[in-house]
Structure formats: structure tokens, C-alpha cells
Length: 351
Image (cartoon, rainbow, N blue to C red; front, side):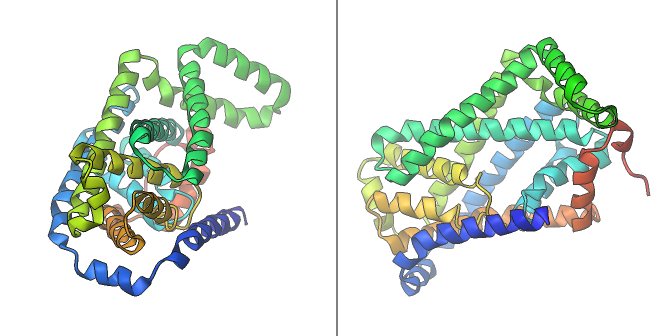
């Protein structure tokens, strides 16, 4: 029932975002513009994207190394499976799925690896905010998205501060947890929560060093710059008239505009949605381009092409690795259950 409610909420949010943009589009013109695109430009875009995906794998390798050093070649398929899960299944299943596969392959506890995934999402959000604020002085950002950014910014900053506090003051955290657990939790529940707490604290240990935090942040910037370069390549699949309002300000301002779109889109996709980020990806991108003076039909054709170009390659590759690991949807359910079990249940399953 809970999962059904989550899926329904995601579908409703996607429907709302589509409702905001679809009535203003003339779909035959959108398809016509897509039919005239030069899709060869997507090839270098995909290549750059996979460079960024490899950088994302290295970042996770760096964050996991205090738990267990995992070779990049072994970790890359796990990252792709995570993308496949997020793009195909609801509830951001890919995040739990890759933690599950990592535990199966490398015996790293699910809760510990999920803690590193949360850190990834926090740093991704911080970089998205950085992109948005860098572009704001040059951007006609829609008012609704300005309010959204102002709402998200303090949440991300507070969350970041909390995680850093958790890592730099572990004794205080342990004392606080011990008091809360001792006074509020029954003994039978503490068997589970004590172990989850310990494994979670192990997972966020990569934030204890200032140099490690800097390395994670810099790597995150590289990852999202690579994705913005893909936005730039896909842009060239269309006629330059599509981006005349941007190009007239020079290549630098064009790239800043794409950084802004990248930032807004990925902040919006943190909201629950239908699988594949339907609506939450498309509406912010189209609306921002329209704010720059781009024709709505051309903006929609670019956005839809970009969405597919981002979604399809890594989903196909992730599906291959998913099949190679002989995984099923039931494995995701099992992963969720095992993430909440004590350590003795977190050992790999041997069939």
C-alpha cells in the first residue's frame, strides 16, 4: 500500500508538470523540428556523458575506500544498474538496487553504501545550486523556479551541515543517539537500530577529512560539467536559430545558460515523479529556454531529444548489467527489507 501511494504521488506530480507545459505546445511542430535535427551530434554527447559516468564511478570508489577498496571496473556496472533502476522503476529503486548488488558482490553492508549514496545526492544538489547561482546574473529565470531554488537552497545547506556535524563530532552523535535510543526505544527495536546507526556512521566516514570533502565536491563539479557539455552537443543537433538569443551573448553565456538548465532540471528531478523523471525533467528545461526567448516548439523538441539522449544509453547498458547479474524486481524488495535488518542479515546471500 505504501509503495502504491508513493507511485501514485509520483505520477500525479509528473502529470502536474506536464499540465503546465503541454497545453502551450503544438505537437506537430515539435515533431517536425525533431525530424529536422542532425542526430550525429548526439554521438559525441553520449561519449562525454560516459566520461562523466566514469568520473561518478571514481567518486563512489573514493567514498567507499574506507569500507573496502573496489576496483573501478567492478564498480562501473553497479553504477549503471543504479541508473537503470532509477530510470525504469519507481521509488528511485536504483539507489537501493546498487547498494544491494554491491553487498552481493563486495560484502559491503547495504546501510553503509546507502549512506555514501545520500552523500552523493547532497553534493550533486550543492553543485546544481552552484550552477544556478553562477548563471542567475545573466539569466531570465522564471519566477516559479526562483521560488523553488530559494526553497531548496536552505534545505540542502542545512542537510550538508548536519552530515558534516555527524562526521566531525562522532562522540556527540553517539551520546545523543544513546540517550534517545535508551529512553525512547524498546530493547527489541534497539537490536536493529543500533546496527543501522553503526553502519550508517561507517558509511559517512568519508566526510571526516576536509581534503576528502574537497575531493568529492570537485569531482561532483567535473561530473556535472561533463553532463552540461552533453547539453551543448545536443544543442548543435538543431539549427542555430534555436539558440540565437543565447548565442548572441557569446559561447560563455550560452554555456552558462545550459548550466542553469542543467541545475534547474536536476533540482526538479529530486521531486517524486513517474519513472524516467517524466515532466519534472522536461518542464523546467522548456520553460527556461522560453524565458530566454526560444520558441516553445523548438525548446520542446530540444528538451525531448536531450531527455532521450540522457535516458536511453545508460538505461540500455544498465539493463545489460542488470540481466547479467540475473536480477529481478523482487530483488529490489529484498534489498529494502535487508537494509533494515541487523548485521547478521546483511551478509551476502549464497545460492
